[in-house]
Length: 389
Image (cartoon, rainbow, N blue to C red):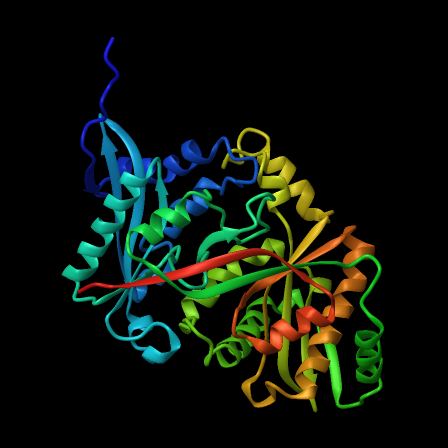
């Protein structure tokens, strides 16, 4: 009997609810055999892609594509444009004419090539002259293609993909422009003596106050922290400001995962100047849920959220106002927040490790902090670009 020859690949734009369901479900089918892949909650996956649910669409537009062959869906990709990213200075990584792609899943190299070409064609049609990705779908969601660290599951809000994708993306003409580094550090035994001395000196400084967030004032605290974030990160590569509605959206999404002893605000002379957010790693729970809270996931999740025991905690966001950056005070505040949270994390959450990241490969301040606490790289993500001539 002659071997079956695969038919041609057709790329179709996602237009219906059924198409969008296929778009979401495909990731589950293609990644099911990967023990390090953490299935997202399907409701959150749909919300990310839906105008009216995700406030990113207030300043961005996207087109989703499916790849089909022989009646089967064999791949997916998103192409998108963010008006706020277009308004950023070009030397910061985004800027005029830069469109994005993301959410790539493909059965084989041929499918990936066809999907990337479709995304590029759409971006050209929108007047873009540069394609940068992957972003899923904003720089604040899950940016970058995983290129190192495939052996362990990612922690909360970090992406995971097949190790095959790097070669496929690069074969399509994409070149690396930025590395995003994630660090892991053991926290049960504390940090090196130099860090402890800096923290002890900071504790004696009357100008400094490190406080927990007040969850009874959640909205105000979220606005305060995100205000520091927009200032602290504004000169970073790839920065796109968060809008008020995005801040509210993120706050609502993370509210159940916010614990007062895991988030700190640093005040200097009575003014808030830095923050650090630490989240329990809900992925330890989600990895066995197949993307659904039914039939018993709700109960497991609610029980866990009462007081999570989390072997690994993640630091997704940390920031110091620009006026203090690259100063000794900035590193003092960073070490104090890290150490204060470390103490509570070990005692109250049974934490053994911390994940810090992602960190831009040119963020010398954060890289120095990571080295000082003897953290090691455990995952690296790569962002690529390609001219659309």
